[in-house]
Amino acid sequence: MQLSKLLNIAIPMIQAPMAGVQNWRLAAAASNAGILGSIPCGMLSKAQVIEEIENFKAHASGPYNLNFFCHEMPELDPYQQDKWKQKLSAYYDEFNVEPNENLGVLRRPFDMEMAEAIAPYKPSVISFHFGLPDAALVEFVKSWGAKILSSATTLEEGIWLAENGADIVIAQGIEAGGHRATFTETKLESQLHTRQLVTILADALSVPVIAAGGIASHHDVIMMHELGACGTQIGTCFLLCDEADTSQVHRNALKSLAEPSAVTNVFSGRPARGIENRLMIDLSFINSEVPAFPYASAALAPLRATAEEQGKGDFSPLWSGVNRQGCKEVSIQEVVENLWTDKLINT
Ligand SMILES: Cc1cc2nc3c(=O)[nH]c(=O)nc-3n(C[C@H](O)[C@H](O)[C@H](O)COP(=O)(O)O)c2cc1C
Image (cartoon, rainbow, N blue to C red; front, side, top):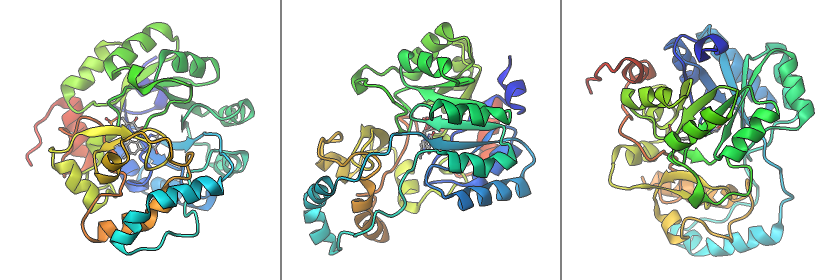
């Protein structure tokens, strides 16, 4: 079945959920542009998620995707935290800041309380990152008719997702910005490019496959469909859009194509792709002393805030895919038109 029909959208394209850089405003504008708008909920309380839904519905009439994380939440390890703060101590001295005592807003996994809070709205699409929640939650979400989406970074993950309740599998290639959706033991080095992953997943799975990672032009979109994807999920291209809340240091980094992107675990404890910056380089990108996800970010918060005040993105997660060519400072509608119909954007 066509993705547009399955998700009730005009164009078979999804605005990727992007926690920390967007809210209902981008999702509603995406929806009004004919694609599926996504609201990232992984860092929000129940009340905040409800507020997001209400705001979306006040500004758009199409369906929307609520996106949640579903990682195992480890116990906080105070020893690990102390070691992490010691590792950052030279930066605290340099920027004259104190390490913070509290953990701030943590990325939390989807649970029954959240499911019950959103159920009255019957959102028609729920997407998960890092696998799927337990079977009872999957069943509950499906009970109101929602379609479940989740990302795979390997063939094995795609098969597991399809067998465990995903109605649609997103093939997240190694080019993708933000966190790797990986939820099995796999080596980063062996993860595939989007076009390869789409090809093998479309061939192996009986559920529809959506392509994600590095898609930045009409040509890329067409190629993904030719390889067997029934749609695309696009993030990086929308980061400079008027309706996104991307910070100024992040916008500056996206616009300067000088720095490459790389996969790092230093910002959260899990591998994610962002534009190379000082912290990533100093800590060698993947560092075994970083606290377990999601506990790494708290100790970085004061450094990030102070550096950003000085116009520096040295401690900020500048999430981005490998391909920033499609980033434009225009409305999301214009970017979507460019991707879908190949109109030229005059900027
Ligand atoms: C800034 C940023 C934040 C992201 N945050 C999330 C998130 O909260 N949830 C999620 O499922 N995916 C997240 N992703 C990953 C996207 O879903 C998607 O895999 C990726 O954007 C596709 O690659 P592209 O950025 O090259 O288009 C994020 C990506 C970016 C760039």
